[in-house]
Image (cartoon, rainbow, N blue to C red; front, side, top):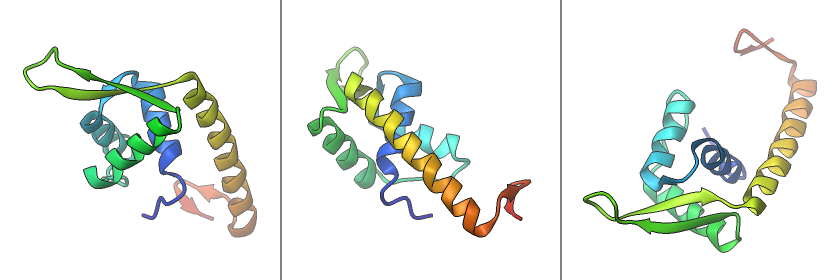
Length: 110
């Protein structure tokens, strides 16, 4: 499944729902919440998280409370606003596509 252009919304959504979490937990949440549709490699997720951090949408810190030092990510206020805007944009795309191909019924296009 091609998610180009939509990865930011997925990552921001996971961080908004999960709260502060390390990168591997983000990867696991994406896979679990999508029933395996978004089983993304670290080489996709970590650079995207770093890009979102540079943009001020995500903040991170090193967590050294466990035996292994891990980077923990959280959504910023700007990230919450960006998520809301991207979610609205996505809903517009879905409505437009449905208008062209027909609505989904029981998980399948009609």
